[in-house]
Image 1: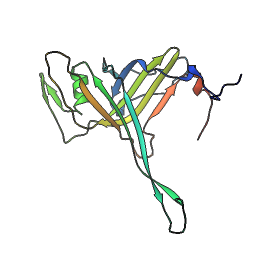
Image 2: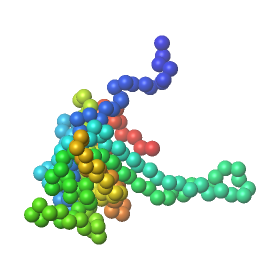
Image 3: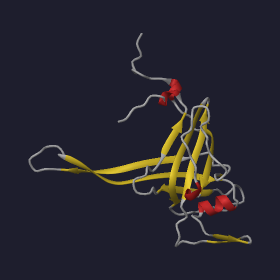
Image 4: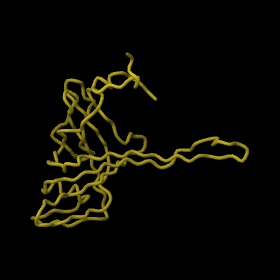
Amino acid sequence: MTDPQGGAEALETTVGAHGHVFVSDPSEVSVTAPTSEDISVLDETWIDLGYVGEGGVKFKDEASKTNILAWNARRPIRRIAGDASTTLGFELLQWNSDSFLFAMGGGDLLSGAFTPNPEADDFRSLVIAWADGDNDYLLYVPKGVTSGSVELALTQSNITPLPVEFEAMPDEGDDPWTLFTNADAFSDDVSA
């Protein structure tokens, strides 16, 4: 009997388990295209930010398009690309100098005293790496900043995570993000 779904393949589903979040200074980054034998080609400039909340990482990539309408046409005659944005959201569970400075968007940490610097943008490179069985994935954002507000709930009955919203801000002409994987489902070269 033929498959009524016409291409349904359970092995092509992805579970984002056992992941890590890494950051680095964009001027020091060295990420080369991983091979199927070694997906995580990260050097010592990358900092592992530790435990991430059980909600994992939320990735949002959106672009707006405007339809151009004409009086003498029933459908749009053209579409014009508008704004585009890529954001990633997650909660860091560990509080240390690396995670706190990243979550707060930079600042100064001197002798145990943190002072925010809202005037400066703390540009970072970001990597989200995870494994699903034999498949490895590495989502690379070459340049971005933490954005949005930080709200902390200090309670006696639970830990206080550091919420992060990271927005890709690529240099002109650069891609906002790249996904590297050794998954067989991605082995063909295609363009759309």
